[in-house]
Length: 151
Length: 364
Ligand SMILES: [Zn+2]
Image 1 (cartoon, rainbow over the protein chains, first blue to last red):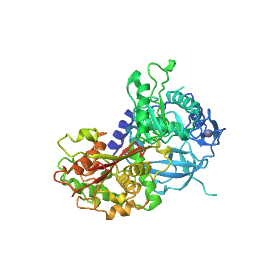
Image 2: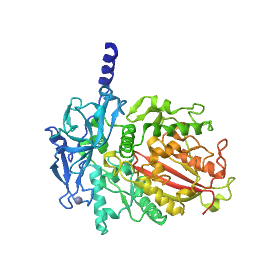
Image 3: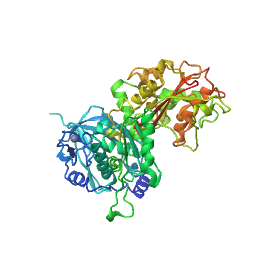
Image 4: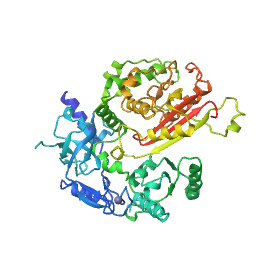
């Protein structure tokens, strides 16, 4: 790739802003704690159900006000894809990158990024652990994952 | 409080007041706007509430929404499409964010920041899961667009009429999101499609032999793929099962599959979910299957949306239109020999909101 091409690519992606992160009063604690590298999920004090993303009711029994709990950050890749052409042009400067659905050991599943490894090593069922990454454009820590360090 | 939270409160209040639990709710009717969610609103709300309704709808009648929901719920119950329908309306008015609060669809908050937006990534992840669980190969999935394109050679209305492709063409087309290549992804285009539904009595006065709706099934389970109960069996499985039961039809009696095909993987999962082959066998089955009009079980004789292009939501109606034309004997240039029964499927969002119909050329 020539310098001209790469600089024009960067210019183009910088001109397209990422959709800003819109939180709600209910979800703000999730993002605040994410900035400290912590992954919060919800659990229900009535039936024990655990869930992500945060809601004002338990999706299993509809009990009020599920409680926050800190997740271990351990999970496995439920499925993934290597993004060559992003659905939104504001991420064009990062391709190729791996997005994945990770199943947390607590049960809930979440959308995330798999980082710190060659994309071709990512596989369904691969153990992963939390590896937060700072997003400059969103001004927010995102809860990405990396391959779990084997004991 | 957001609109979603407000709706959750109302839903719980009415359901608990009726002495019921969330597990009793199998139908959902909502208003046109839920938490500033621009589309797929019933799926977004069902997901928020943890419901998996087998009937879901939007009523957009302004101030008449409430009563309009009630008789529609009763009609759905009378039709056997649901037993217990939650009819709920709600909207937040946040004085600090007037005039209108921003898009608070959970996908927008919990998926998009990771660079996960659009349909391609979701279907790619479904395909990846299918390959990992069952050993489905890229070569097998590539057969879907190839065989459907072959069918489109008989359909001059298809965008890609006259442009045959090979498995090599598919596999050497650009990777969009692994494992899906460009030619396994539907292409958007303009277009429209419509059908008219009337009573069978009234239909006898019309110039064509009517086509009969013999059975229907619907299932909505999630909006975001992270909330899907499973990846390699879609909500079409129970929807198709209900349609078979209502029509008293078995898989081996079908003469035509007019099935939704936004991506190659959807056809592979649908033939499994319809019981045409065993779960997990979609890949090998597609590899040997004859999709053509001379087959025992033709698939998408019009070429499917992968060949006709996806004219937005009309693309899905195209599968209904194709089945009607075939059952009437009016599919000029690509008519199947005397078909009597067809399975039609529709698929919304990310294998989230699914409908199955059994259509026939006689009333029973
Ligand atoms: Zn609960």
